[in-house]
Length: 204
Length: 343
Image (cartoon, rainbow over all chains, first blue to last red):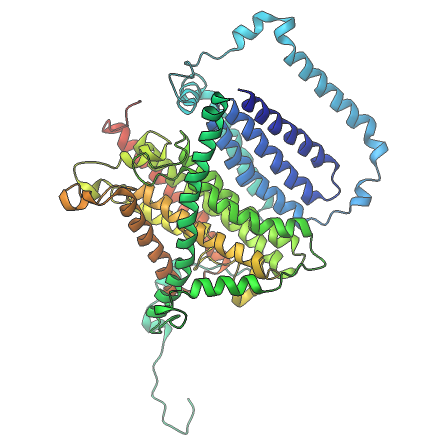
């Protein structure tokens, strides 16, 4: 049991340290790499809680896809660190107040077990006991029955976002030559090659 | 003290021993895969391949390894040193850690976790970081182009790979790799393997793992005729060797994944007398070797894809088709009441 506690503190400490490095490191690419380390440690914490499905999905979705695109964009941008730091004092007030509001909200939610003990009991989702069913199955049973419509709504919102992104970036440009694979395959010998007999010493 | 020994120390020693038993043969397999590649491609191009070092060139991989170790390690002065050194290590480590969940036979697995296939998928999707970090840290043009190509390519092909895995999981009803193999056991021997009922998905999966491992004809991140050696331009000596080992270990890993998902893992092709005397790990290795041969065969046969064609194939052909097949499989399973029962 003590080893499990030690592993928990290892993951938690590295997660917090890398989260601090995300906002304090000078190089934005380093920030993204620390963010990935933070995701990994969060996945480790999920595994310790017995939620291995969530842990793997966190790695597949956030580390394997989202952070790749993030890194892609950050690497392409030429960010001037000195200029980005200039407005630090100017934005300190508004940034600090947003952080304070978020912090207070978290305090309210996390202290609800002391302030409103009844709310915790109603918020708990009735899933089967962890020993009788894998958490993958338990998650599926809740997600696709009780929350099926909300799940579909999430899918629709993502679809709208995707269509929106395509509409915003799609431009019709003139003079672009596109490859039409079916045309290439449908070419016949007659329309592509012409065989001529060339006598030596004279051109065509 | 006894509790500590039995609870923690002994399992740790056992796990380390199991890791050694897997990693040792794996590294030898990687060494001989490089030799097999040169021999197979040589035979297909009517050449002899390496035949000077040792009998039939059998010591060639070790000669190459010694040569790489003797070379000078160069750290470009403009590079980001820490990430530059970390990138090949990451590639190599990722190609080894995934073997923890691969079942070599019934119960022959280091860690039999519930979400084995997701773990494999997660680890294989991390492979791109080695390439991107190498390309960025080198601080040079060609590696950077290689890294950008690799990032776009791997994200594209992961999508269809995920859908292929979902199709198989629909038929199995479990994310455990041993369960996936056992679900392919049936009365009809090899006709029960998912390669036959899900043949189009097997083809898509095979092409996607070619793209995922950056192998020809999808080796655009390396593309020696256009961008020299892509993300590996600035690497030399052992740091290059780690990329090289990582690429080949990844090929073996992906072949093992194909064998588990579609070729029945350690199961014999027919459950009759002389065939089921052969132990499971031997069948498993034979299936991996078969998929690996196809890797080499493809490399000797096809020219490299152009970049826009690669993207078109991934997004406009594979994605819609595999999505359609997921719906079709789910529909057939529900209509004919073939869905696997909850355990």
